[in-house]
Amino acid sequence: MKILKGYVKNPHRPEASIVERYVAEEAVEFCTEYLSRAKSVGLPKSRHVGRSPGKGTLGGRMKSVDREELLQAHLYILTNTLEVQPYLDMHRRLMKEKNPRKVERWLVNEHNKTFISWFKNEVANCPSASNTVSWLAAGPNFDIISWRGYDINGYSF
Image 1: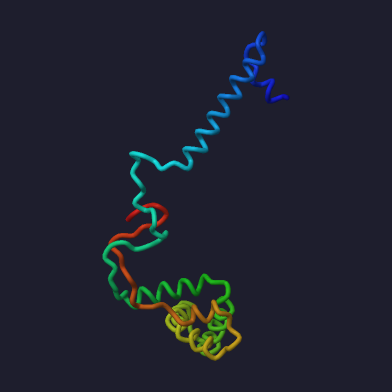
Image 2: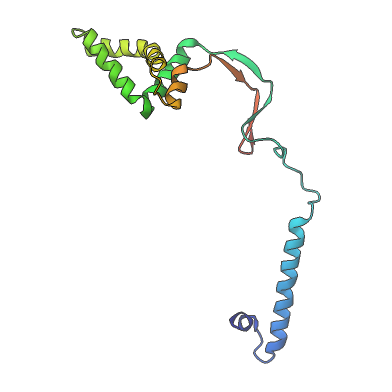
């Protein structure tokens, strides 16, 4: 009843006001439902329709990445992964035990140079390592696919 009272704009003829507003509301509802199913006319379709998000579009080709840069990125990822932290601590401890007289800076540099290969060997000998750790120990692929065009989140680059 409250909704019908809200339709009344002319207090002298409430029935007519209610009918007019109700018919207008039904017409709007019908048009909205009809238009949601109708095909658009004159509006261009998005060129991203049918493409999966994050897909290369133009000129895919294989590239080789600089080994040092890729190993540096791999070390960064390993250093910032929580599951790898115990291995990092173990390697640092081993480095200090083997080289007790070396300064901290030398130990850090040596740790950065040798950790990836040590980590790969350590995980290979440890059957209880998680899938994530095993995957990270395998290391990166030095050949990558480069695209001249790429579609992601509705944008083309």
